[in-house]
Image: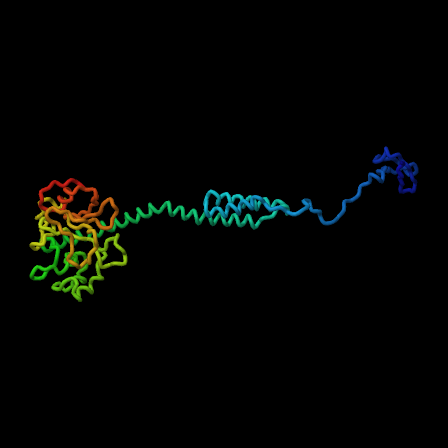
Length: 342
């Protein structure tokens, strides 16, 4: 079908379809004319209007978001095994949802998975960590208690030596009346020698420990006498006790043992140890040693052993597995035994 071409001068020309798109000249005015395309091939402008949905149909739920929530809930049981994957899948799920242009939903599921995974990982992980560290914490506390016990015994040893320097001998186990009846403990007698003179002055030394007046002072026990392993609420009881006997550092007869009256050596002779049961600190009650019998002692310490104060003022840790013969040799001051190192 011929193509109609009209020049500006009014001349009309006809051209075959095969010449469409080429140029020609008007025979009247000489203008250059472009032979147009046939109407069937003419270009038409695209329709203008709101964009059509590229992905028709109902949006689906992100599988990663679902998996994130499920793993997040399981993290309260499985901790890191599901908690961390829940967080990762939740983040990936949110990313997929944002890029899906409405094709995916499940943002709330992904956020829920991230939150539950984080909470499960942190809380349960913290509980597991505490459980793993509990033995170390307990060991550290026991070490601190043992160190405090060593410090207490060293202060007691210093007070005993200060007493001996002032009086020429260590104190007897009891403060007695004129008839030799025990009234108060040696723990009261050494109060002035470690900064407790004001408390010492309040005692009626001619009355027993449980007299109405002296009982009012029971609650004022110095912290030096408080064993770290004893219940913190009871501040009237102590386990620090001496070994009483004719061959020990605290015989009942006589004014007291002088530092020179220790043939076995002060470094080899026990003075103060921890008894098996706490006693009122002002009460004249200690461990009795006699006829070679070894009293029970050790306090509330681990099965491995306990601290003990020797007559030279040193504090050493004694093992419970120690032979009775060695322990007897440490208790006596004049037995002539050969005491091996503890």
